[in-house]
Image 1 (cartoon, rainbow, N blue to C red):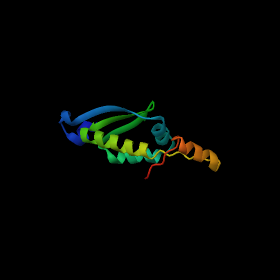
Image 2: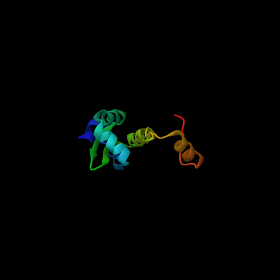
Image 3: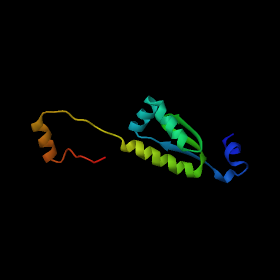
Image 4: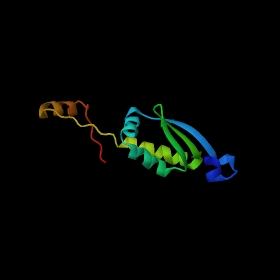
Length: 102
């Protein structure tokens, strides 16, 4: 169905791929359906979340865009750590904590 709708009879443009996801992105997409819908808006083709992976069938160029969008989701990972000032400073001095600019 996808192939006829988008590319007519040009089967060469049809690309299928299973994209493995980190636990973070998997949880994000399962917990926030709007995030999965946003990914679908960025690709030409069919995108399904099954068994912890994204199954994509569509335009080859869209597969690259999909991977870029997943990388952007990965980059949104944050961890907050609370503790007393002395312990946090000790962890920082030992290199156990690092800060990254957004």
